[in-house]
Image 1 (cartoon, rainbow, N blue to C red):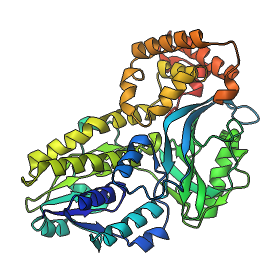
Image 2: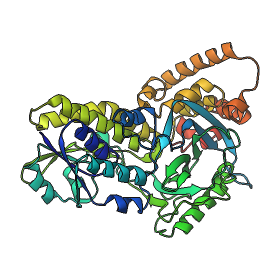
Image 3: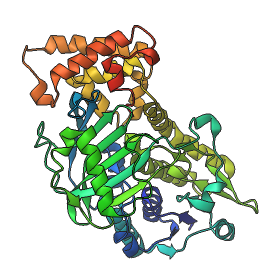
Image 4: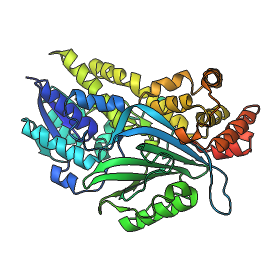
Length: 466
């Protein structure tokens, strides 16, 4: 029986550990916290997982919370217009239907539950914060060591891949609050949806349904441009102050979201989180001082900003990909060639996430402004954009290159015209059609010149998309 060591008990580490265990491997899992410590600790992420990632959990029969968690059936985007004396109005608002529902389960529930299941099934759980010296000791005693926790000393084992890492500093300051008491969206009160609110020069506010330790909840997640007006959470340690700041920003920058948040309260004392980190791709093979090799897993080697909601999705996809590579390899040695080939298999998927997320962190070119505006008028465009969160590879076909975007919009408009019955579809799609048309029209004029020099309302409204 081949022996595996996994350092790190997050989405990727635990999913991989349970998968290997089910395949008959002897698995040791190292975590710096016990399941009970995780349950009563602070929230760790926002973790909205889409159809493909959820299916990997179903395939392993570890989708323990699927019946309890809200079923997220849509994903919507709002773009704030220039400020007025009353605050920021919405210039555009739309929601696209997901082909398969998404779900967000508080990782305190999931990780603790999976750790309990791992032990019940005979796995060895070691509570210890691993150091490089520990890995040197264990590397000689296991057939393969996988590092799924990259903070601190262990992260230094994996060198930065400069060619794949365009950023050298954090691009967003992150602030999360889990709350009870959020009212439904007036535009679609029966539809559970993730809402992305884009505010020029400020950042983004994500709102998403979730399951937490105390039941159904919602997550309020600010992604603030560093140094901007929403970058106000650094040094805030009091959860009540954190929530108050969250709501103050919502009241001014996204009043349409604040209107349904006037009665919210934190789910628990650990329901807030803040921080920032630099998006980075790293060398997947870590070389220990004594020459031993370890393989980096998921965000240890591919760290993306949470802007596009891909962290847990990529972790699940990495665990599934690595599991397949390990099983297919049989009894052969896990040498450096195999490690690099295994990472390359995962990177074939992960590269699309990294490209899309990095693109969204930058100010959008004019053709993307037009695309977002068109989604407010054409449900098919909204649908395709929403489902790109599950399969970011599709963005290669219509998102990055102006010519491909133009061709796609021409096709979508032709289909929309053919199907048009002459009725106002704004109510069905949750779209403010007048404002959407304004954005689309102005974006069209922006495309005639240098997008960086355009100062019309459409460009201002989408200047910080992502």
